[in-house]
Amino acid sequence: MREGYIYLYYGDGKGKTTLAIGQGMRAVGNDLSVVMVQFLDYNHNKEYIPLKKLEPNFRAFRFEKQRDSLEDAQVNEVKNEIGLAINFSRKILETGECDMLILDGITDAVEAGFITDKEVADLLDKRTSYMDVIITGNKKYEKIAEKADFIYSINIEKFSEDKM
Image (cartoon, rainbow, N blue to C red; front, side, top):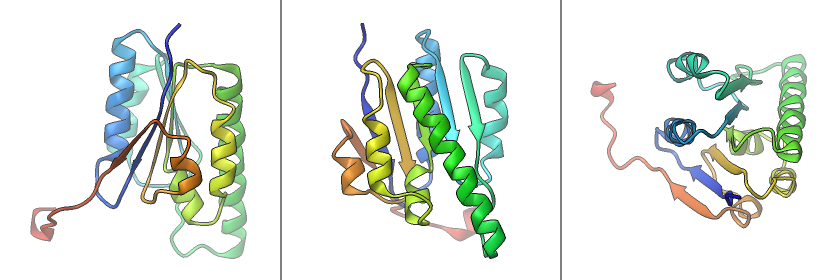
């Protein structure tokens, strides 16, 4: 039986989600199944839409909502969505439903105060031994980092606005 690993991709640079999806594509190429859970809105439609063509081997689920300048009712709605994403992820981790689980933007949900780093670390303890888990987001949290086998810092070295 294969051994799974926990990967953490974090930093202010672009490409964390793309890197995670690339790992997922490689897994699909090795006849493994992948589930990606997106926690917060990044407007990644360019990456998300083509993934639908890879179903059922690569399934993507979006629980996130736009979170810029939220009013109280919207904050509660986002909290509920994040709660659903956590419960969904827990079920996948406990049942071993896939070979790779991508938790896209989960550390951003921690940063926004919707969940805690301890909750994420506890969630990772539910992982079946053969499952890979990829965590993405802007920040690294020690409780999550302690669980990771591999940590990648993705940072901007040069930014040219006129090229965007």
